[in-house]
Image (cartoon, rainbow, N blue to C red; front, side):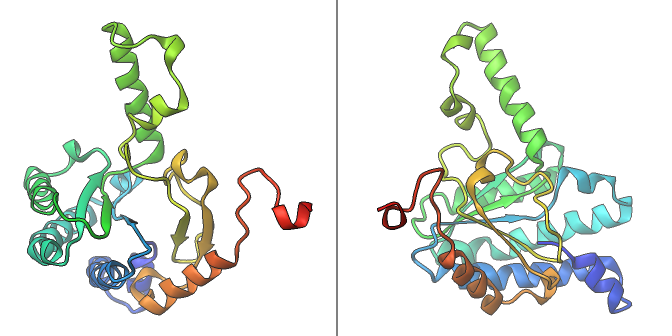
Length: 229
């Protein structure tokens, strides 16, 4: 969800105002996607580990926006049958933000509709390091042998353990790179890059990205059966 700050700068507004507008758009997209029964999982990357390099005032504003967004929408998402989980290293976030995030996850845990993953303080490299450390600790304790480690072992220790890999990654703000987003899980995902900044992202643009995805031919290293024949 890129471009909040740049969008605000273009309108001669504070960057924090752009992030606030981005949260409003996020709510609209969640509501739109939750009505599509064929979309099982939606992940929104709200805050990167790299974002910790930003000015302290902007980080504080972002933390406040996340906390208010989660608090204000917990009951509504529960009522709409949306299950919410969080990925990333939340232990380094403000305690109150951790608390409301845990509350949202708990309140919506039994929901069976859209699975919404919110990535906070998430970075793909950080996730992989944490996963490898967990595996190494288990090996040291004799809970597993290095010779038995497979790709499934690694997946089981990622933040997204038990969740299917993404089929489609959409990036706004005219950025054309993954920037560490799910480097392992998104290795076979289709990529759609959108010029509009996130505050200008609409349900119609989301549907356009889905339509683009549906045009793609996904062979996963194999051959198109019709073409091969």
